[in-house]
Amino acid sequence: MATPGTLDSASEHLLRELAPQVLGAVIRRFRDFTAAEDAVQEALLAAAVQWPRDGCPENPRAWLTQVALRRMTDHVRSETARKLRETAAALELEQFAPEAGAEPDEDDTLTLLFLCCHPALTSSSAIALTLRAVGGLTTAEIARAFLVPEATMAQRISRAKQSIKSSGARFCMPSGEERMERLRGVLHVLYLIFSEGYASSAGPQLQRIELSQEAIRLARALFAQLHGDGEVAGLLALMLLTDARRPARSSPEGELIPLDKQDRSLWNQDLISEGVALLTGALSKGSIGGYQLQAAIAAVHDEARRVEDTDWRQILALYELLKRMSDNPMVTLNHAIAAAMVHGPAKGLEFLNALDGDTRLEGHHRVDAVRAHLLEKQGEREAAIAHYRAAANRTTSVPERNYLMSQAARLSDESTRDQR
Image (cartoon, rainbow, N blue to C red):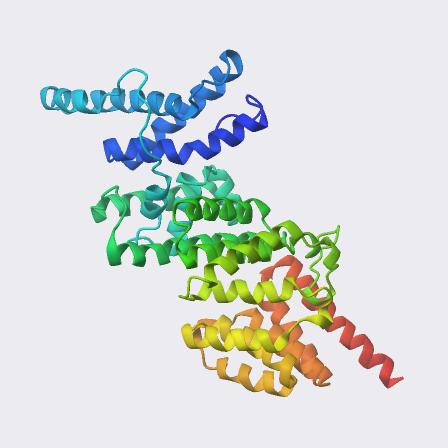
C-alpha cells in the first residue's frame, strides 16, 4: 500500500478498496501475477505522491488501472527486448496497450479472490495470498499477524504465486460445478482469516482485529456479487453476529472474558440486527448449509439478553443438525457443551469421550479446556484442575493460557479453603 502519512484516511481506504480491482484487471490482460502486482504497487505509489498534490481524479479506478497497465506495457517491452522477441511482442502490445481515457469495464475482485483460493494451494498459502493480493495487506503485516518472519511469509506468498502459475490456472470465474467447489474453498479461507483475527491462535494478543475486519470486508464484497448464495450470506452473518460480541470479550488489560461473563450491553446491536436479517433472508431460500447453521447458533446467543435466557435446547438441536452435515471435531466439541447445558455435565462428558481417539484434535487445548469446565460443573474439582493446567500448557495463546491457569488457581484456592 501507499506510504503512511501521504494520504488522508479516506484516500487510504479508497486505495485499499480499489487495489484488488486494479490487480484483477491487469492480470486479466497480461496473465502474470507477480509482474501485475508490482505494476499495481507502482500505481498505488504514484497515487500516494500525486493525489495529495493534484487532487483525487474523477475516476480513481480508471486512473490507477491506466498507470498500472502502462507499467506492465513497459515491463513487457523490456522483457521482450531482453529475450529478442521484439516483433512478436510489439504486435501483442498493440492489443494490450490501454487507450487514453479508457475505463475498465468490469470489477475483477471476485475473480481474483477465486484465483487466490485455487485448489492447488494449501490453506495457509491461500490465506497469505488472499490477504496480500485482495486484502491489500503488506507482507510485513501478514507476517506479524501469523507470527512468522517477513522473509518466511514472502517465500510463502511467492510459492503460492508459482503454484498458481504452474497449475495453468486461467484468470476467469469458474463455472458450474467447479465454481461451487471453488466457492467452498473461498468461504473456508475467509472463515479461517476471520477466526484467526477473532481468537488468535498464538502470541500475546487475544484478537487481531485487522484480520477479522479484513475478512468481514472481503465477505461483504463477495456477498455483493453473490447475494443469492445462501452460504455466502450465512458466512457473512456468522462473522457479523460473532464480531458483535468483540467489545465484551476482553478486559481493558486484554484478559479473556468468557461468553457467560460478558457485559452484554457492550455487544454491537447494529451488527446483530444486520446479521439476523442476513440469516433470515438466507434461511428463507430453503437450502441450508453449515455456515447458516453456525450463524443461527450465534444468533441464539446474541438475542439472549441475559446468559440465563439462552435457549440451549435450540442450540443443541442446531448442533445436532450440523453434526449430521459435517464430520468436524470442533462441531462435536461444541455439541458436547450444548448437551451439558441441556442434560447435565455427565452427558456432555459422555459426548466428549467420543473425541478421545480423534487424531485431528490430538494435543488440542480446547478438548482439555472443555473437559475441565464440565468436570468442574460435575463437582470433580481436582480432575478439573488437572485438565485446566493441561489445556494451559497446550495453548500457544498467552491470554488463553493466563485464563486457564487462573481457573486452575481459583479451584485450587477453593479446595484449600474447604480443607481448613
